Length: 168
Image (cartoon, rainbow, N blue to C red):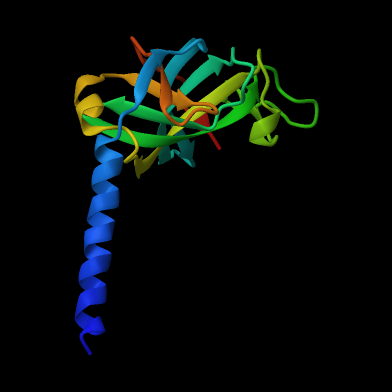
């Protein structure tokens, strides 16, 4: 009977401790060697109605190791990102789409190599691995990790342009 009271309390303490550790864990930040090509916001329209408005970052990957994760930090907030390999030219099996600047190639993450162009898009999922003090200090910064979880590499984003709408 006592277990019914102790177990939820113990679970709550464990959850709070884990969350607290993630928020205050020591993370080393270093300038990244990925080259930022461009950053832009782009709307997607379907029958003249807004379907999505996304922010994208295009980089050229310069590391021998493949990327594990990307996080966008701005305004005291860190959010997860998704990424994929992209090409500037239209693939032979696709027709050009108005406003689409880069075409994705579906490959496993561990196949990303030095010199590949990557598109990174912001997700709305909050990221708890970036310490709060870093979230408050960093502005318009893209963070990424490779093999070492203790090191986050930084890419400073100076300006974010507005791209032509994608019309579907």
